[in-house]
Length: 159
Image (cartoon, rainbow, N blue to C red; front, side, top):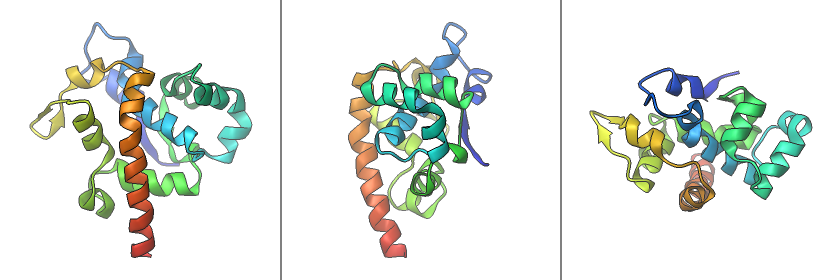
């Protein structure tokens, strides 16, 4: 099982002292929400956490809540099905052929939410202060949909 991201990497690092640890997971939670909505989660997640998955789909629980409650704050290959892992492996890492041709997740996230980049790193203060809200998720969602469609075309062309 490979780990894409871990909230602890963020809240235990260069993290604003006045924020809750959940703020270190907003970017992970939004992507996880999208994966849940797109039904890209692993069958084991569905079997073990159908109530929480339904709550995310119904917007009574956020992806950040799901990440901490069902994934121990870690976003891993075990959380996604084959298609989900294929996409996230190509999109979450900025060095893949897909990311080089189109974009990677954190670059899109930074652009959508106007997060400053300083010396090739996202400004942690603005990254972690972004509100974990459904309004912000709805702003990001069309970009995720666009990247997923591009990835599907990319994979069929690469084929």
